[in-house]
Length: 552
Image (tube, rainbow, N blue to C red):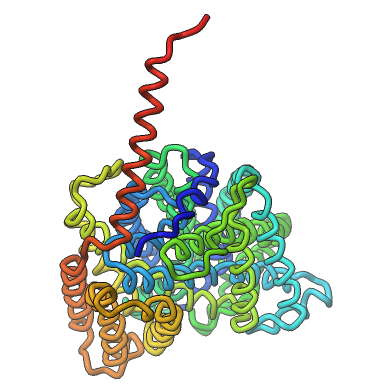
């Protein structure tokens, strides 16, 4: 499907003002949000001291998948990049499913960050503050305050991308400094090495719990922030160089911070709090509670302040990136044209911002606790991951001549490995959560049907054929999760150990089916024409500049 005639002009209203540092700040600012405030406790509850390895595994998964998206992002430096690649390689059905999964995963983070801030605030020693959270979810007053934060996130994005960049870089510096100080202060205040060997040993609940921690404890939620620089590729000054540096750099910096925090958290837990085992941990504001326990009051105050800054910085970033994603979905042909409108003066897609604000309010009303949102976001994120490995190798087959500022020789190996990793993490998320989120993916199909089923069947058929692999993948993975080993919430029809091999084999099979199903569809032809036109315009401008005589 060709893009609307006005899409190119609208896309040109974006300001290419973000360099490598700003894009890295976007990525790092997205990764270090509410995940660092709660992730260490949730991971430790599931996996004990082995939660340290869960962060390493999560980073490895994110890095392999990010490498596939870095090539795609440098090829197509357009706003909302992550929702476009499946459309370019497989047409409307696979493209829409990938975009829907990606958008759900990202837009639901925004109310999650607001929820995290309010949940931390509920530990303040004021009566009104304690009434914000009941121990499981936000109260009515908590939801009201979180709603105010949502409005602030979107208001900061309403005016200009340059304001966003300046504000976000400053916030990101603060967000890096505070977790680093927190890890150091807790390590110095109290570090009980026996916690790493007692209460069941290093992996008290087995390795299946480590893998589940990767999927649902907020680790995937955290590292998913690598997408943000890619979704803002339309505003990058030199996307070929800056995008991969920003994506990879933000993951590696965040990994060091998260591992340090996890180690510090495990060592700083008071012995009495571990008397009933790791699963009994129950903190409202985990890191701040530990700081108070060891008399580090200045750190507790800093953490309460950062509980606003870190989640709010991430919420602000995701408000920006999701609006670019909505713009991309509109240009794919699956939303009204109004959502593709970009304000010419500010370079901001304001109608898309408003749509995402309304959806964020809806998620906040339904999922009032950080934990429940983290689970939904994590699984939806993994589903969105499977497009990158398939799309990157599909486009190498379909369009080998397109310029690739980032081209890794090892991509034929990295891509299938990334697909296997993504499939394993989806399985680790445990049944029935996997089935619920896959059902949520299917809930978006009526929107696709509204725009696509009106077309003649002959025109629609190749899109259906190319997207069949992705639909089948979701149903098969739901079935495998249901039938899987009891370690991952299944019914035990697949024996432990063999289940992981079966999931890996299924991931590889669908990877090769997906690559083979790709085709030169109208969206790919359209973006090829756009890139050729832009390249010709740049060449013409360079030639004119060279030919013009210098003036003294």
